[in-house]
Image 1: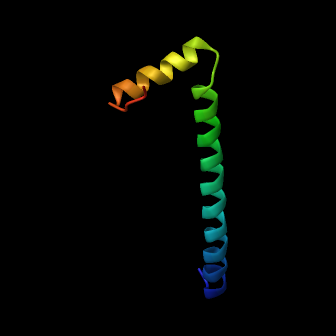
Image 2: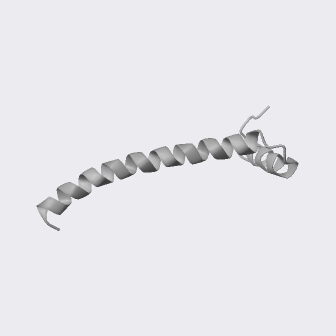
Image 3: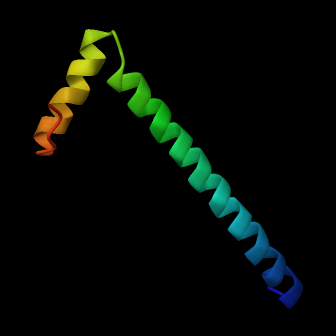
Length: 59
């Protein structure tokens, strides 16, 4: 790896990390919103049981 490609890779990597972080945050908000406010009883109950299995208070 040359010096030019190393410095280019560092800047692309930082931008890539921010994009990955933003996309992961959006995905998390979407999943929580979908599951938390879902009218599909099976989806909501699965999330509810998962929260209880991790000893996370949910109500």
